[in-house]
Length: 374
Ligand SMILES: Cc1ncc(COP(=O)(O)O)c(C=O)c1O
Image 1 (cartoon, rainbow, N blue to C red):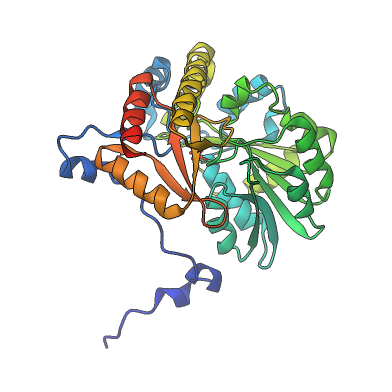
Image 2: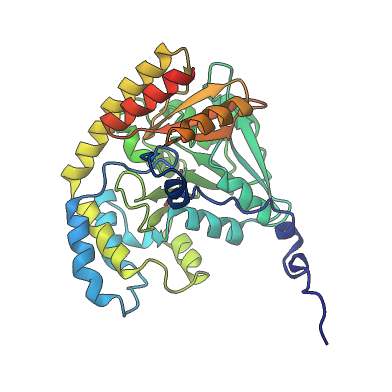
């Protein structure tokens, strides 16, 4: 007997059936085929355009003979190496296929229907989708008129029934951050039973901001339960390999997280690539220095076009525009010239444009295209 296929919505929890449709990422291959004369410039995903350490390619090559074996599911080698760098117990570290996967699991494991999360607005949109799928609500604290975020307003949103704080710092898409005294104020105002999720995907780039706080020391001093999310996608140029990590306030938190997780996550090639990338401190330092000086140059050029910028500590700059429509139009016109940048909803009707810092010639090309439009 034949019948219509069952409505998939009936097979998922109610929260899932209400989610907006999955947004496909940019299809660069298709764009290239349709525009064979255009050279694509990817400045929309905060990828590292300088590329990884050459030692990464060597490590991947050497590890190819092991692809028929499962990886070390404890990620012990990279955990030891990272723990030595951070001077912490390796048991406090979680490794996953990207920081986003840790975020995803945290929302699944820690949030209950009806829970509330405090975050910035705009911030990394994944937290909204993941929280919605757990039936939890994100309270987004918007930026001020001068494009700064107010610690007082963030604290005012921190009632005792907040289940999780999700603070992205440097924030994506704005690059904004709180200073040490502001961050202390926020941690001090957080319920000691609230999980503080600090998303530091871009933390390495904040090294040139003298007022960027020692976030982990402040969380430790306050005895706050926390997990700091970090990634090797950005500063270490391993976005395609998929590896991110979490620094947990206590090894028992990491153990509980791992107990609930799938057994094999990070692959054999990725583990070797990560160790090689982590070891090449010189390569990392050169890239960070290049981003720092190029970002200053790009910021000056954008300001001279009359654009308003957030104070970004990331590997990107962020422009505030009147409307989302305006941001989308500029991004679409830039895309017609082969330059990809990211429009996003800002505060209220505001639109923001996030632009990754590339190599000098990439930035010159982006600036030339943008100045022709503004
Ligand atoms: C703020 C933030 N958190 C997490 C991620 C995800 O990083 P990963 O590539 O490690 O999943 C990104 C990626 O763009 C990000 O911008």
